[in-house]
Image: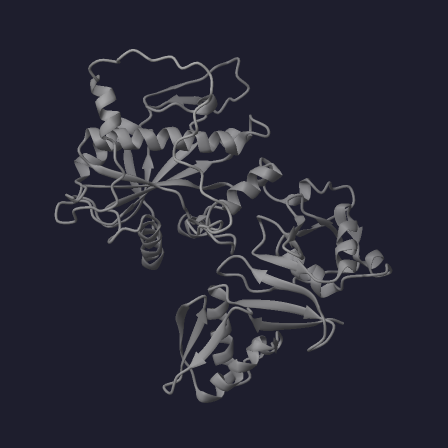
Length: 462
């Protein structure tokens, strides 16, 4: 039976000072994990080679409780990994790498008669010289170190009963199957029930594999990959020039366009504003005018010839198939006449609805936007654009998520132009944390989730 243990990620070092404070050091950064007893700090050194996973559930004494707390804090920052090995110190069979901040392994009970099948969102791929198994639904990634395990898992493209799997060579072990089931990489199914039907709720049924993968991996919160402007190709490839080299064909001069129209002037005046004047914050009446001019429902209609009987709306910006799947959520830091908090904009009734959320979650949302744009302070109002994905994927195949992102682009340009026209400042933000949004709203990330953000406020004078 494979041994299951917890160990530090190879890139992490733990340091303890004379006062018992333990710090995690990695990639030139250091993070304080709190103050612990000398005995706990001594045992923490064993995390380098690994501690048995069972020890973290015992809590037989104060030291066990301290190590458990330390491990939870390390896991929350993605600094731990979980190992399945032939024996302690033997060869690794599977390494589990957390992808979400709240991942902690669970092993749900599995009976011999249970049938398991791979999720349609699960996939294996090469990562460097490694083989990894992952899914956009999973809270962890599984590095497969033994090719026999990969072969055994491939058999689960069709439902297989556990009692039959046990009889086969290369049976991966009940513990691994339970861990994969916990991550929704494997699903329990039953005779007469298709794997598709066992996959989850109706919101998940509307997703295609490539769309859900694109959504989960191109945003923050559900993976541990580098994100944002990391310049991964510096010193390897030259950057492309700002202007494309001209084509060698005949060149035709275009006539002078003459005086600019008011709209053309507005387009040229548009700027990205990252710093805001917190002494003169945006006011509620200005926020109302901004939302009315950019996103309010102008009319509703139904088409008897359209299969979509959910109806349609007309709003100030264009949208694929008149789906208007985008919703606006406002994290308000400073707005004259409006309390600090988290709100949903009801575009049909033109009103804000307060959403209860923890203070630390609101702070984390605003801090993420501040870091993303490199601003000295949070935006006065952070607008998160979410999508009700089923409004588009119910109708469109293969292109649903692509259409949603195109809709986000048109709405962001609408935001920019309205802000410029009102003398306000705004800036589009390219990184959203879909896991944080799910916690703040209580919505499953595949039902409704963030696809864009926009910082809004009264710009600081440069």
